[in-house]
Image 1 (cartoon, helix red, strand yellow):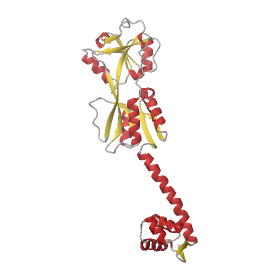
Image 2: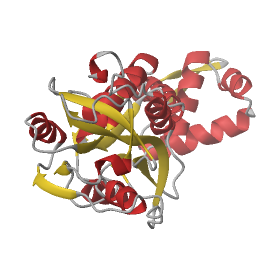
Image 3: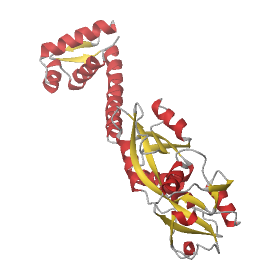
Image 4: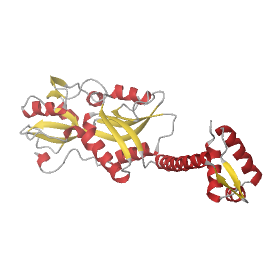
Length: 307
């Protein structure tokens, strides 16, 4: 097999016209260059150089290998440049799994910001379920997974959780509801109300149930909707009240009012799951920074939201 480094020495000899000049340019001794050429000729099975007075010139085989050495040299230089770009986070591919309500409010502006800053980074986005997304990260099928996780559930082998945002829950009431005149509600204000469920059992519903338990009651769910848009429709129809996270109110129903909750305020915590113990690649780190900096403005507390 031909040695690529010896081919580059051959190229230096051919372009400089002599072993002595090539040795001087490469920082070698002339005898070391001659030895390299002798070994390369043995590898090639044919003569590569012939003497011409004080210099040398390539044989036909020598010219052929010199041309290939030039091509290889360019490819190696391109590979080194591409590798440097990848190490610096200016190129590469980042595979991301996210949940629906994080898409428009967090993922979209973060990816747009990353694209402006580093257009050479490709982001592969796919909607995913929390546990399935976590499994994909562990199995190296994804680089980042956005998910809601309880603060006491952050110990998973091979996974590091990066805090992105605290998504507070807000009270959603029908227009004209007796509590709509209040600008801020205590959670106990809703204790005797019929409730419209907006989440399936799991990490998004648990903060609501835990907050209600802390306030001394259990919500009376009369409708289970399973998603935030449908829950708002049931609320607008007057079937009950609901607690919906801020990210879930990006598209607010025109016939509901939204109020802040206190004593206590339920919050779901959004994390990015990445692999350990590998160091986070620069492109992934840049995306995480963009996610943390994404404008968290899913709910507009303007005049319309005030009822």
